[in-house]
Image 1 (cartoon, each protein chain N blue to C red):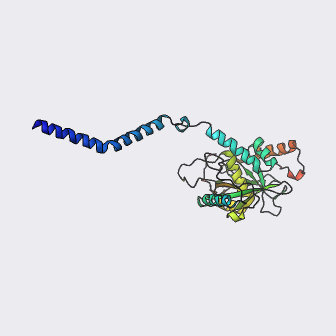
Image 2: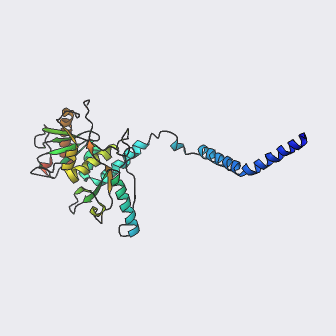
Image 3: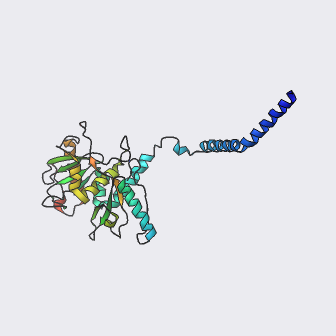
Length: 82
Length: 203
């Protein structure tokens, strides 16, 4: 997720292919170094959907279809007007 | 004498031209190429694109739809917010949890008691672009909701610790929240909820 743009595809590939996995790892590190959070959407056997925050590429489940990067959360600016 | 000087000057000019010709012609070609590129530039890069934000929001809604529960997507589509059950209480992550959150786009997360409708707190949280700290654009509405949903789902305690906590009414009108809870109750009733405990009673 990129402010002002929405969803942008950063990289795609097969983790079973070493060259593609290397590219995915580089893209993963680049985003985390830029201060993004990484989340993996998951779906349980009962169909329940959840999300998991991951800090390293090794934490990403091998069968994950995608990793979503979004800006790190910060306390919102106080505002008195409604 | 004059003839000799004139001839020498002419020879000098020809020699200088021969020396500088390649670089002069190269610079001219580069200048023409740059002018040609400027003349042929894409119109989209010239000015403001009024459809960009709308397209970004459409993409964000598709992403949200693909990540959250079907019921939660329908809730956002119909009501404009998502209810997430609190996970830190004694009855966590389920209908009938001791507290829940309402996630609004670009507004604080509102915590409340589902059994009574009492408002607990506002958690003000934002997702700023850290690569452009000054005047950066914000996430599309649906992306903001999804970011809050993922953070609450994955690490509720961390998100709450990061957020600025305020008493109810600081930014979100309590009357509006009560109306939204009433809308949510009606909506779930019309939807035909599987579990009676899943229905939120509005204050």
